[in-house]
Image (cartoon, rainbow, N blue to C red; front, side, top):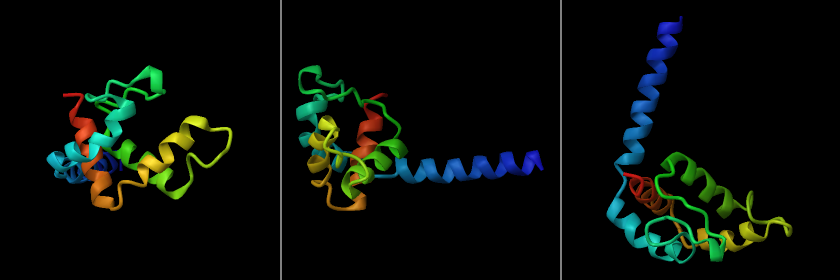
Length: 111
């Protein structure tokens, strides 16, 4: 049973990782131009603008957070000042493909 679970997990991660890595990093680089205003040109973060370091962040996590900002699950609480700054920026990414591309680019910044 443990072997089957380990094998299934390995296959799932291989497929999922391949899907994320197969995205268009060059398109993501272009989309990242807006992000760099707060997160820095290399994703290093800009403390003065409260932009955290995101370089190398795993793509699956970035995708999830961007989707949360777009849906209003993040950045809609009036007490979340930084989230309110980020929410309209996420709206610029109008398609799921754009989100995946920029997430793949951000992940590549850690290489």
